[in-house]
Image 1 (tube, rainbow, N blue to C red):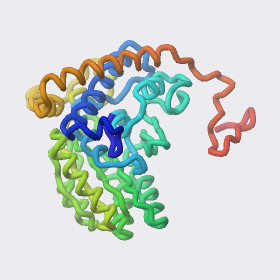
Image 2 (cartoon, rainbow, N blue to C red):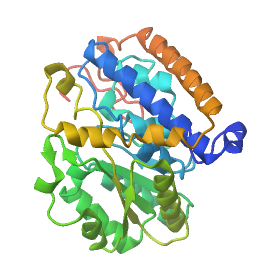
Image 3 (cartoon, rainbow, N blue to C red):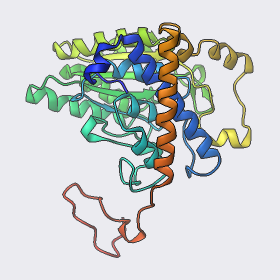
Image 4 (tube, rainbow, N blue to C red):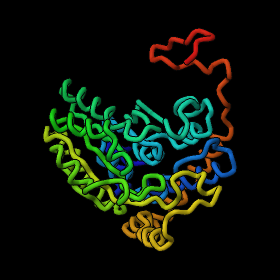
Length: 334
């Protein structure tokens, strides 16, 4: 797992190796999750992140433990890249009390506040104002911290995202908006959903804005490091359009019903640019092999851990609704 502040051993590794380890972790985790969702072990399915690993790894490599991020319905990669325990993350997806959120968040709402993961979010674009609010708090307190908001291209016309752009630029907040542009908002291609250009739209609000090759972990890490440094120096917010691609459908349900709406040639062209393959070429073969074996064992252990978990008791359904530990009265409708 790679974050801005890893263990001494991890810090001694090259950035290329750290990025590869994070990407391999995400890929292996997502492949296992997809398989478990198709067999019903993960109820309700998942939104696979396979193909987009370079974005999560590259951006989170620029962050420290005290920095925060908000995520999306396709958020496992972000949560893992920030340093979450794969065992507890998978247990959360399986809905057990050993999960990050005691089995109450699931795939689309996994969070680990202690690590600065202020939650994945099933509402499109909903993480942007949360990240902007956190950044405002950092600014008011004089904290040397940065907030990152991940969202997809489908969020670029959400009012709350554009409002967050406006306030972040107006107040020069230490926030980085990361648009993972995979070209598709569910089954709607970007060319049919977005007028104009994403970078120009963000720049129109006064954000520093640029496009990044989101299939290249090094390019993404460089852009994120620059944006985070600018935030720490008081230079205000940045918008990064990371151009990437999801190798699987919008949701695992598409695998079950065989839904297709993307041209096979398009999918093949993007597969040829697999970010994990590209990153492995930057790492010694023996090192990559050792990491692969390490991650495979780690995910095996995570699967075993998740399968051994217990579902929450029905009479505890209303527990943990309030931050102060207050429990809702029996019979109260929530």
